[in-house]
Length: 327
Image (tube, one colour):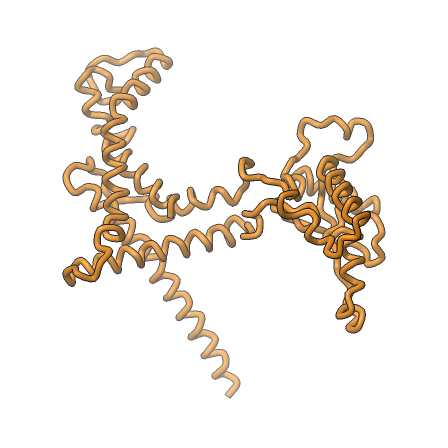
C-alpha cells in the first residue's frame, strides 16, 4: 500500500511539471530562462554539463510544485478512508468509502501476489534469520544424504555456485571481497538444515521413532562467520542439556538483516508500476488533477481484477467441457 501511494505521488509530481520531452516540460522554469526543452528559443547551452546544471536548477525550482501535487494525490487516495469514518454520512459518501477500501484491498492482494510469485520471496524471510533453521536468504538447496554425512566434492562445487549467486542463506553475504578462495578454501560451507544435532534430537522423539519418520535435510550455502556462530551456539546448548536445539539459533541470537536489501523489497515499486505506471493523462495537474490520477489508478487496478475473473471463468469452463467429454 505504501508503494502504491509512492507511485501515485511520483506520477502526480511528474505530471505537475510535464514530461521531459514535451513542450510543457518545466514551463514555469522556462519562463525564467532555465528551460532545457529543444523547442525553447531562449537561453540554451551547447555544453552537456551546463545543460545538466540547468535541469538541476529546474528540478529544484519545481520541487515545491511537485511536492504539493504529490501530497494532493495521495491525500485524495486516502481521504475517503479517513474522513468518512462514521455511519452518519450520505449514501454517496458511503459508496466512496466502500470503493476506497476495496481499492486498498486489491492493492494489498496485488502486493502479496507480486511478492510471492513474481519475486519468488517467502514471508518467513521477513523475520530475522535463525542460525539453526532455514535462513531468510535461502533460495536454493540440494538434498543431503540421510546418514548425516558431509557434502561430497560435486555437492560442494554446487553449493559454492549457489552461494556466489544468492549468498549465505543466513546473512546474505556473497563474500565478494574475501580472498580465501585464492587459498584453496571454499567461501561457503554446505550447511545441514536442520543441523545434524538438531535433526538427531528430532529423530529421537517418540512420535518419529514409532512411525519411523526421519528428518529430511538439505544443504544450503553458509559463510564461515555464520557457520562458526552456529557451531558455537549448538555446542553451548548441547553442553547445557538443552531440550529444544531447534530454537537455540532464534530469538535474541538470530541474525537481524533489516538493513540489507533483498529482491523482495522491490514489491512496493512493482506495485506502484502496476497500479499507476501508465496514467493516460498528459495534462498539467491543475484543478482536480489529483482526482484524475486517483480515479485512473482505481480503474487500472479494477481492470486487473476483471481480467483475473475472466481468466478464472474461462479456465472453469474449459475444465467443465473437458469433464463433460467423458460422459
